[in-house]
Image (cartoon, rainbow, N blue to C red; front, side):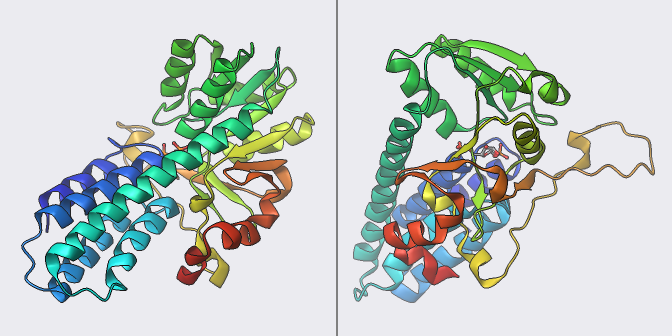
Length: 308
Ligand code: RI2
């Protein structure tokens, strides 16, 4: 097993790499390194190495379709090539990885540009956990000269809300920080809820950090718009064939490291927000109805549907 791939999978598993985008980026870079370092003597051996790396990276975090779509695309371009020469194939993996990362960056910029238009002066925006896509969108609104404030949850058990809070403060955005259970107490004051996504299902449901669906219900109760900012490639094609999105269960020790013996602590990393609670999905193709996800993905990335 390539050492970079093994270490990357380990860092993702231990959450030293966080956020769906960062997980996908780290995985694609690991595949790129493997291709640059390979000692494979023929195409079949190189493909074996790539598939082995794919399996290890896929297993590092279950609920990450962006990573799966990214790795499959990069590897399949190589597999489908008529070239048999290992050097040329390694070069192909590396340049396709680069191309994928550039496109991912462009998608985030477009998503940020589109989403920033939904932010108006004087708004109070509620967010949960840490999404680099949401941060980028807010940074764009700020750079456009908008004045608004943000309220973010701490996001138990791993406190990713602290990352968001720090970034907001660094951007010069007035920011309030609350415990997760205070969400309902402040929802009445909020103008817009904005969260990221880890996965989008074929029905337009969104899988995101645990607690997101409760916040969506609160937004609905208070009649506040709830938006998800996400690249289209977080769509999970396997949900189209009936497979449920797998929800990663993390170590109970993250919740209570010295819990009494025999106590049954559960620690799901994500939950599912049904599409009916989502006003819009802000993506590189615009603000779309979550239910139109399959048609939109089919227009922009038809190859993804091959993995259904
Ligand atoms: P970006 C995170 O998961 C959060 O759930 C966040 O909303 C989502 O990834 C998307 O993040 P985790 O890795 O891809 O913290 O927008 O479990 O950065």
